[in-house]
Image 1 (tube, helix red, strand yellow):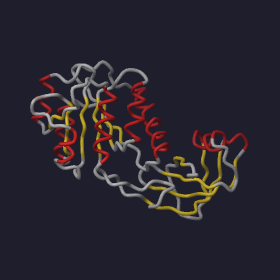
Image 2 (cartoon, one colour):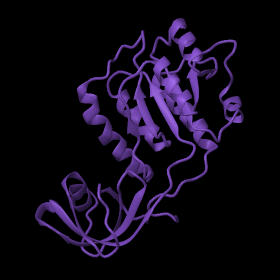
Image 3 (tube, one colour):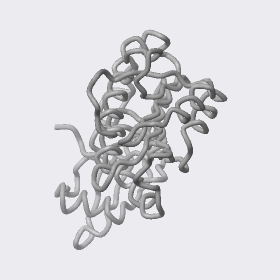
Length: 251
């Protein structure tokens, strides 16, 4: 059985005693029913991971006392995959971020498009990090995705060009390539994926985004939901990426 994984922002060297509090402590003591002597993993969301022994659980699981046994750092995922995506409605936002994080998304930018129905708000910035954190724990990914401020498709493509990241905009056209052809055009490079709203990108948005350096990519003849298109593209680009270390597996 794989030892459970929990988030702790500031890891320490072997031998140090740490106190795990809040939601993570409650999850460990109540949901996972861990007891003194059990082993678990900690990660800081920046590649750091540590194996620890549970020494003591306070009343009602409000805090856990841990001793660090070993510590290491995993290299950042390469190539990095940046998802820039229009927001779907309601709970589909959670599904999008959860699945995208599990598939190795390293950055997320909410797109502001002419046909956008959902606009990014303050409540999103509070909920999204927690969704991504839980998805990291589920998939045992050691790097939390960076969540960027909203941007237009053209802005995202221009920034990708500056960072030498290959940008792909999901839009059917005679110039669009298939997802498999896109991988063959340079899978070792960092990737930026742009997915539009339910009504799609406008022709002017596509023109501006391609002029800024993006390439059109087709997902076939089916009209997909936002989160489906995003997950499909992430999955394809993830397939050709080398495996990165995760907590509880060999480093």
